[in-house]
Structures are given as C-alpha cells and as structure tokens.
Length: 96
Image (cartoon, rainbow, N blue to C red):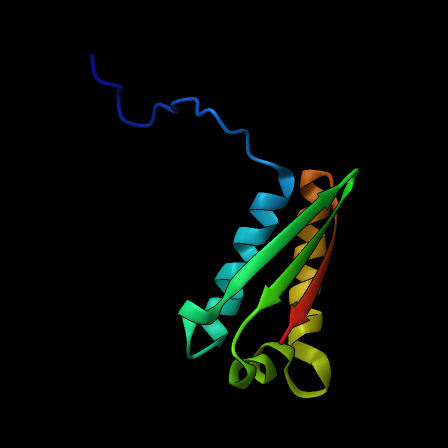
C-alpha cells in the first residue's frame, strides 16, 4: 500500500528546533560563497540554546562576514528570529 501524496511518514529521528535554523543558515551561506562544498555546519545543542559554527574556505569567510561584519550580523538576526519562533536561542559563529 502506497502513501498518498502530501502524507507525512514518521521517521526514526525527531527534528530538533535548531535543525530548522541550521538549514536556514546553510542556505544563506551557500548562496554567498564560491565553494559550496567547503561549507559545513557544526550544531551544538544545550538546554534551550544552540550554537551553530559555520566552516568555509578562507577566501569565502570574508564574504560570509561581510564589510564591517554586516553580513554575519544579518545572518545572526535571521537565525535568532527563526530560533525564537521555534523555541530556542541561537548563536552563529564563523570558523575559518
């Protein structure tokens, strides 16, 4: 018996609130960089908060941070806004 279109099938893993925020951050960062394959995120969850560390190539780190840090500040603002909607506090850091 096949599932009808639009039916959600339960998976073994439950999605954490930080997963949605990490997906957003990854989407934004991959749109900014030249080498998308070098982008990786390390998500550390603790009680009520999450730390998302973005790793990318050194050449692309400048693009992610932006002039005077404006781009990373905007990414942090979006991540915190979504985090607030899903019930967690979020910090975003760029690592090398």
